[in-house]
Amino acid sequence: MELSMFLLPILGIFVGVMVTFIGGGGGAVYIPLLMFFLGCTLREAVPISLATMVITSFVGSISHYRHGNVQLKGAAIAVLGALIGTGLGTYISTISPESILERAFGVLMLIMIFPMYLEIKDKKRKALSKEFPHVACVLDNLFEHGYFLAIMIFIIGLVSGTFTGIFGVSGVATLIVGFYLIKVRPKIIVGTSVFILFFKALSGLLWHLPTADINWEVVILLGLGTSIGGFLGPGLLSKIHHEKAENMLDIVFICIIAGLGILFLVKPV
Image 1 (cartoon, helix red, strand yellow):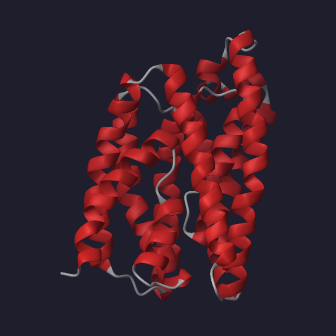
Image 2: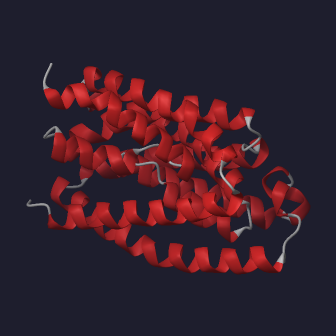
Image 3: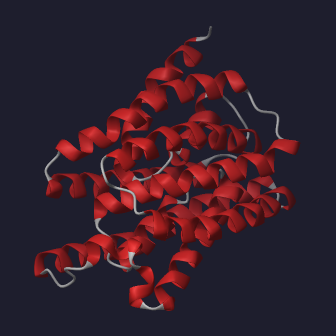
């Protein structure tokens, strides 16, 4: 086995722990890893990323559910939107030139940094002021706040699922920013996003399967590592002080998005 293949489970453990901290499924790491480390094209990397995310998010969602970080009612509405979005995103990816998709991916990631930064600052201000004491169960009490909130969550899932179908990433930026905007607490955002991601990744994989040539050895090796990391991540998160966990989520996620955006913009066509 080549050294790069031998290292995949080790990298997978790191990715699995990290993504359960930030609520993602690893696509933001898998795509550049597969393209720059293993020499895959974007169209080859997308279904591999989705297949691995199915494993990661399944294990992560079970672990997060056990720790009380998943709110099922709100998640179900987001999943409905996400399933429609993954089909739409897959169609867009099949009719778009790969070079355009790569550049669009880089630009999208960099654009997302600004609203994320603003929302992080606003979230901390609201947390300090204790302006919204009801936020703990907002996703499980949607219709108590009117139909507008449920529609918002559906749209968040739809947009996030579209990004998953096009780029093979988790679409976690949309989920995190969207859930912050409706005042969901950080650990609930993480756990519920991982739960939603399982259905998005599975749907995206099924849409891509008819035309995909998946290297299942890579999927199994990455999936083995990420399953271990995904199982350990929520337990580690629950033992970290609340403020430290939020700070880690903020810094790690922005760094991932910035690095990924730059990589895809400077990559030769």
